[in-house]
Amino acid sequence: MGMFSKSCEYALRAVFYIASNTLKGERVGIKQIAENINSPEAFLGKILQQLTRAGIVQSMKGPNGGFFMLPEQLKRPLADVVAVVDGNQIFVGCGLGLTYCSETNPCPLHNEFKKVRNELSYMLHNTQIGEFNEQLLTGKSTLNK
Amino acid sequence: MGMFSKSCEYALRAVFYIASNTLKGERVGIKQIAENINSPEAFLGKILQQLTRAGIVQSMKGPNGGFFMLPEQLKRPLADVVAVVDGNQIFVGCGLGLTYCSETNPCPLHNEFKKVRNELSYMLHNTQIGEFNEQLLTGKSTLNK
DNA sequence: ATAATAAAAGATAAAAATATCTTTTATTAT
DNA sequence: ATAATAAAAGATATTTTTATCTTTTATTAT
Image 1 (spheres, each protein chain N blue to C red):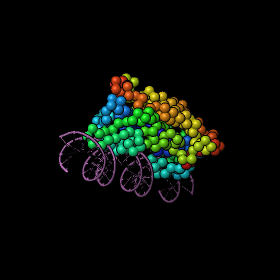
Image 2 (cartoon, protein in one colour):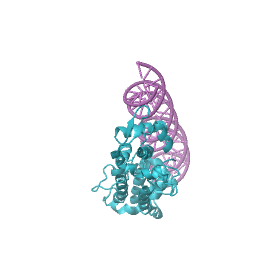
Image 3 (cartoon, each protein chain N blue to C red):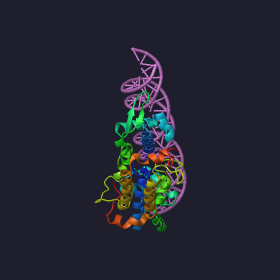
Image 4 (tube, rainbow over the protein chains, first blue to last red):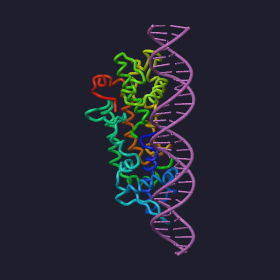
């Protein structure tokens, strides 16, 4: 597997898609999202539930319902999405999976790994969900396959 | 989960342990390794099988048998261990899990993610398994819990 | 040769992650 | 009010990962 769980990959793709459609003033349904980010529909539904509960996205039931985002939600960092779905181990955890690894009781890889982890953490905390809206709408970047 | 699978965490801890014991001129058995890196014994056995087949470590059956490493194996990069256990997706894969993501068909996060991935890749390719032997033997770093 | 040791190999089990299906609830339009 | 729509919630299924148990094979010491 990659850096994130499959659920988290779907989550990130979904919020990017919802964000860019929000910019167009449109709500999007699970089916439409699933098609456009290439994810299993029902499974995505579960993930969107989590994201809604966590306040990452908004949802509305019924006709013309669907998912969308508030202006302040568009500005939230990717780290929030990752934390909701995968937890924060990726930001703080030991590379070798040692529970008691720390500055004072380090694993062999502690310092080397810290650099990488901090780089990832910095990137995720300083990148906003809505930051890619234009490039997504103009087709300069993709979310499918 | 963290950056690596649990199997891979065990694998890295195991090779560090085997390496440091090789420096002491000692072969170590599965039981001893498992105790010292805090992993389930039988499961570790399976992982060590993989590492042996892949030529990351050496093994000998029978009395006084166990695992050890050759001088050239001590110099191999951590990337080799990771590749054997987790594959190379972590070095080359798209952060959002997109199969066709590339320079010419990038996902939104492509450039941001590439930096992090390259940092991790560089670290793993430029760190040798045997590099931590002294600090492990002197107790300056730990592999347990 | 025989017994003891330790890894290899194979089979099975448990847990977690991923995926699907069904029912319920909220919202809208008629 | 009623029907239609779409997410929420709950239940179940499948797959993958993690873990354990048993049998076999190789090696050593007696």
